[in-house]
Image (tube, rainbow, N blue to C red; front, side, top):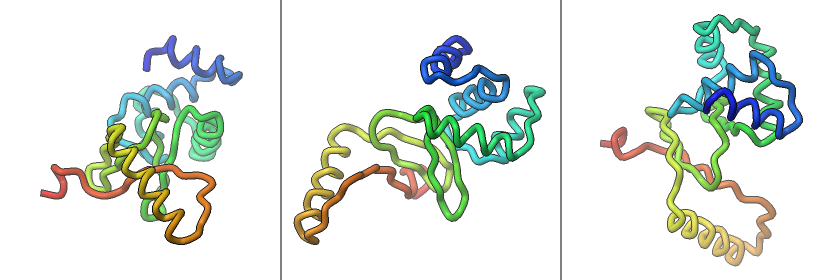
Length: 139
């Protein structure tokens, strides 16, 4: 994400444009992988941005609450990525995030409907974030 895109995104959400927020969004958007708080802090420090961990936690919560970034928790570790439209697959080995095709998304939604019918269970919200191994890591 370019600086102007980050500024416009933050302004559009009614958020102040701060050095930490700009750096956070820049680093998360550049990364092909989801990043944990420690990784974010290391990347920011290389840019001479040195917030403490509590500031990073607070800023990631704010950005997530405003639907700018998304998080997933795997094995007790929370990781962050730029929010993408649609469903994604997250490789647990290399940490790569891959958007799912519309046909795969449709199959997942059909499975949800089948579960709904089979269990007499009403699903109110469904977020399909698949966690597993990509083809490269599973070979």
